[in-house]
Length: 554
Image 1 (cartoon, one colour):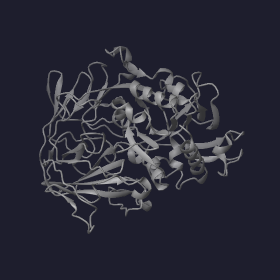
Image 2 (cartoon, rainbow, N blue to C red):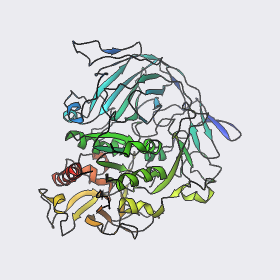
Image 3 (cartoon, rainbow, N blue to C red):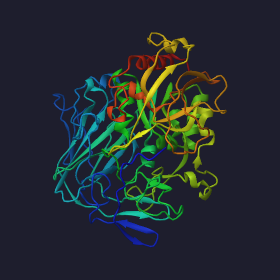
Image 4 (tube, rainbow, N blue to C red):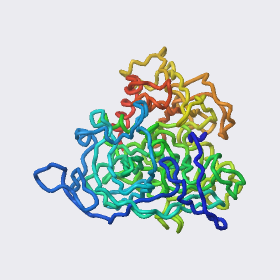
């Protein structure tokens, strides 16, 4: 729950009453610039087949071309990952930083964080002093260990000046109404996944933005990427939902905002939110083993809960990473899915700590009127929230009634180093009973096992609201916690991995630690303690869990 920002970028503003326009002078940068120049390209509707195929032309237009098959049904994850991969998606930077680092004066955002096949995606780019910009779209996966596949290549697009963004001092909200640099319809044959848009300016500046493609048809496993948490920590343009913003917020009287928008760049190491320091691990693991998986986001489920409900619902919903910010609608959708027999797998922690509500973009946004483009979260200032019908603040009971555990206020120690925060991680040990047997079968885990480096950075444990009969599978105990007094339903120093069976027969599993996914696929930047290779015991337990839920009857 502590802010993951390393520095605060001070925005330049032109003010009038309660509104401020983020001005161009001296504000353009890859990590928080507020204004600059960008190109505008026509929306294109080219179709084609995979590049190099003799059976038809490549997908092409004056603005871009598809390098993959665009018509027909999408491939399975297993088939998709047999395609030739590349490491060209990566930005320059030290090898231990999986995504590299954005550099130079360029930033961008997408029209939709989560999008469905057939819909049109737009990318908005600001690149001060550049004559042209180019965009490459990569699907993230395994691809023989290369991590990504190039699916779209743009032409060199002219860079033009973008209008200044709008900042509202009353709530800390920043929204941009930039002109689209490139727009393209999403082909029906494109596989669901996490897509990185790599931005390159003629000046040499580079950065990323990110979107999630929902599956064209139901998948047995559906992963929820925690983009709401990405945005909550995003201070681009002035304020985030954390203290430390560059401007005083009227409603709180502090420098902590109560509203944030998706319609602006991410102030992060790569420009792709927190993806490359957390959720990339779970994506790589699932795709390496060819699981039948699709992807969505928290705000997408809030907007369209039907994707997790009904006769075609997934066998399991998988919540991953730093999943701190949930809406009441998202929680209701998960609860209804569980009660209908869908298993819930929380490969996450600090889960459901804060309740938010989603709201449409205002007229100041490029997506004006579009639902779920703003996040409203009064957090510690919940008493000031004017909406009593759908209030924000701490999630009731920390979500323990659904998840089986709740955030306990413990943040493991942070290293004082430049860049994104790095935390210490600690050892996990199984419960002596090693139950249920199917979870531990063939894993090499014994009652004496200790798995280092997977307990941190924010911990969840059982509470009085935990469902009766919840099993304790393992834990990290005696973990030192930082001095910050975080609001939480309980206070403790435990990370507890839990499992319960709902009355519908659905399983609900929760790791209780952010570090579990690091043992599935390494993210060296996360911690000096994190595994540098997949831990075969955690991999085996997770594969047993997935096999069990995939084999379950509806």
